[in-house]
Amino acid sequence: MLQARVALADNKPAVARQVLTQASRNAGFDTRQLNRVALLQINAGDAKAAAYTLGKALQAEPRNSASQALMVDTELRLGNVAAADKRAREVVSQQPRAALGHALLGDVAAAQGQWPQAVEAYRNLVLRTEVPPLEDFRQALSRLADQERAAGAARPGVQDEPHLIGQIDPTEPEVIQRMRKELRLRHRALETE
Image 1 (tube, helix red, strand yellow):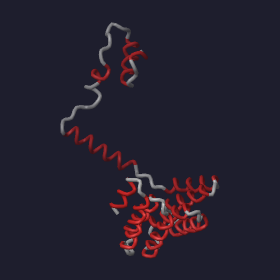
Image 2 (spheres, rainbow, N blue to C red):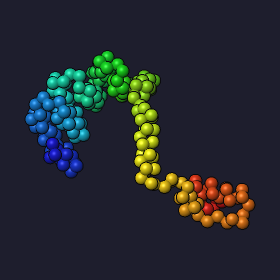
Image 3 (cartoon, rainbow, N blue to C red):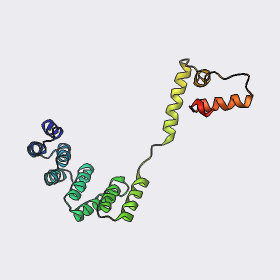
Image 4 (tube, one colour):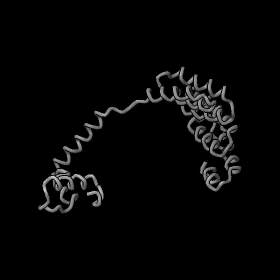
């Protein structure tokens, strides 16, 4: 497969296709390997060969989500919109709560120019995408802050403030001094003062 990548990098897609055809045969029914080969075949512009390779992968593991997603993309490239739509709907029916199927439905609808359906599918994708809980991040940051305090790290901001804001004329009115300080802390240009 390295030889195919080099051929693609050297802009020799015919050589890459030949190498990848052999790689597809050598991969047997190893789904992960077949998916890698198919992706490179797509990059080499050989969607027909990618469809064959992905067919082998899906024979070995019919519910493999990576193979299904690549197959939908490949079918769209080949103009088989009906087959891509059918496969995308199968993915949604197999895993209705997963985001992947809705992304595939959006891609199929977009390929057909059905923009309202594409937007709805992508909306469903966003609604089903899991957002990591912010509490985990907050706790991690709190632990880091505790470690820094325990290590004797200085409180950020307080000691650095004079360094960040530079020299301010103490003879100016208090309100002007505060304005300059705020502008400089916000990294405004001196001309804005």
